[in-house]
Image (cartoon, rainbow, N blue to C red; front, top):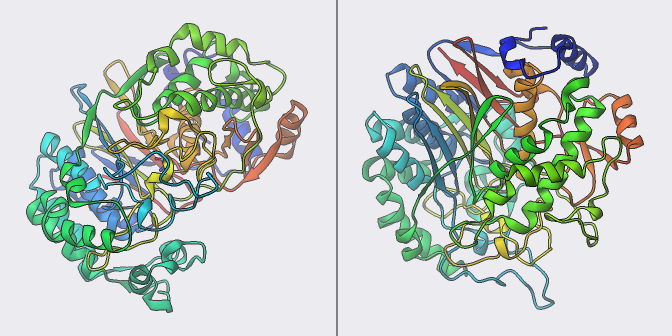
Length: 576
Ligand code: DON
């Protein structure tokens, strides 16, 4: 067992033996403590190994972290079709070694023809059209986002960064079992779309592990992007084919939606926690507000005194989660369309008051907690298992750091491959509140702040985050996982900063999640029965779950880069 972080990182903590806590926690979870991958020059952590290697090659060839992030983004669109994309959107958080930060919001937006009630059926309730079919797609942002990142921060020739993806699509790549199994999965929407079925399921004769998947149409689409930049996607052949298919199938995205798409540069949200600077995602993500709210509510509670994943730690963190998700449902949305009260939500006085409503011994029923003010709330809602998105981190030899979370929303998005273009479309429109109080795919409820409007971005949970101490880079982190992203990222940060776990152990430790509605505490497989029992005794409705986000983390330990990717999954940390 190694607790690798400098003890200085734990200086804010009570003097009890942090090492012993962490040791006990991992042993009691039956986890073999594992070494992170270590490197001194540069590192890429991604959820598909071939794409991680593409990034590493860029770094080794002298590219910077943003160059590598661009190349990884395009490579994942080929090798990780479940979430890697050019037909979706996401966020890129950049922190240069000189302290400059930037947040590129390339989230999909609602097409001009979108309207508030577009997903309500004749009975006034949401239909499934926000998830399935051509109408579910928002205007894709990924290609524009990667291009702007490159224009602002890149150092290598654009074409050289897209070309590896073109090659992987044209020449094909060997399917590993996880990728082949995901394609075969009966639950994925690829079966429903003829073009997706043809390309990804070989027309009903699914690929086996070890076979090669070639995507010639995607190769041509990527080649246009390599040669023409984002114009090769938002205009010309790609735009024409995409919008013609949209129109033919009753979808909304038009050529002018594509031409009008804009990446928005935003100020990252910042805060401090236990002596660290936290740089994270602003709205239209709820993630950064959630992370900083939870940190604010935990400050001063000594929640960490019994060790990671102890009943006390889970209880306090779960109560902070509950309060954040209640606020999320009411106040958070696209700041360009709704006056999101970020300052008030992060006001220390507000968070002190919220903290004061946490009973140290008992769970607070969600119906007693509302957005900002206690109130009695409505019926419980169902919760659906999280689908797919992906996150990757890059740090280069100079210490520039990039955290990217991007997504098609659902696994394989809406499952539709645009004929002739080879890429899958997102179903990001489901992240809007189709109707106040009606749960989306992730059980998230929302109101006016997240109502549908033309050009608006749906509220996200994606939480790419960078942590520094003074001017020193400490951690780069993020995750997919739907509504569980924010909690998963927060827990891994706490595992590192508050409990001294190394990057690998921090991502491997089982996690928990509570999102206000439903009033259920989900414990990831691996929690000891005693902990579960203690939490039930405190009043929690405890349920098991397979995963709480899928977190990627790079931690800087005395100048060494240490990367963790979840042992439960199939990602790769590549460093040199
Ligand atoms: O932006 C969001 O919050 C969602 N569209 C993310 C979806 C997701 O993470 C699904 N995968 N695990």
